Image (tube, rainbow, N blue to C red; front, side, top):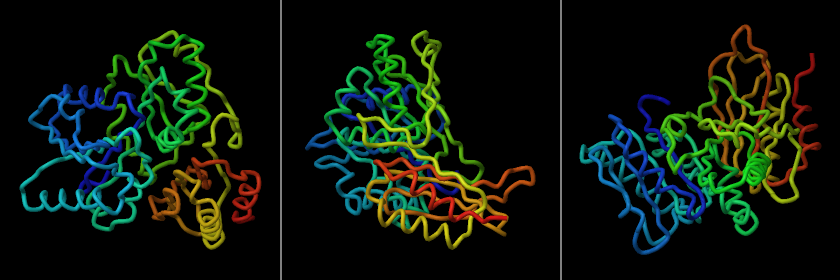
Length: 343
């Protein structure tokens, strides 16, 4: 995280997943940071904010009467501009921003705000998307609410709550479903709705200048628990799909690529499939360029930037991870490989 940019965490999850409980727990943990929380409630009053304890280092800003995901160029953008102005004139001081969305929110427009608006882009930096999962009801929610699949698909961290109400078999079924939707996220299991802030803050998920971590399996990190310990992650190929879900994880790999060809590939990919691509990020090895080319985006909003140079002992590989509704993977993989420079 650049020192002059404020870290932003998007906290999402369907109704009743435990977002307010997690914030409550955060307020009880010692910190010298000043944290600003934007709470969004779909209604005229925010009941959840009344349930939060007060703390000297916490500032809570309420946004009611609408969902910020529905007004990406409106209320949220205006609020972020105002926060920046208050910081500059000294009327408000904070070190970190947490945006707690309504349970009905699709994270896409919220994320796009931080890509599109120049002032916001130069003031704030996305740290990660954290999605809470109601373990007791998630299978039913996946079947009935498409936004739940989007919330899972956008996540960098998944926090499973209410797992103590599940049998071992039910828990394994839930974990398998989550993995099939998003196997790039790291999953934590909350105990009584609580989890250490180190597991979901300062995760630097939007910084790809060092190395792109590709999760070949599903990482389960939790307190010692026999149910979790017995879970065996599903090892599957990038094109593995489930008939129950319409969001999948895809991994594209190649060697050094031609900058013009790979640019055309990404352009075609976004033009044709951008509306279905929730999130994508990658590190590309460009022929005759010592620096890593970083690409990441949300739907049709994409950004490119050169990162650090490849190390002498690093294998220069191009990798692109896409969380998307179903893509013609085999055809797209051939197109991606066609951008590769052949020796």
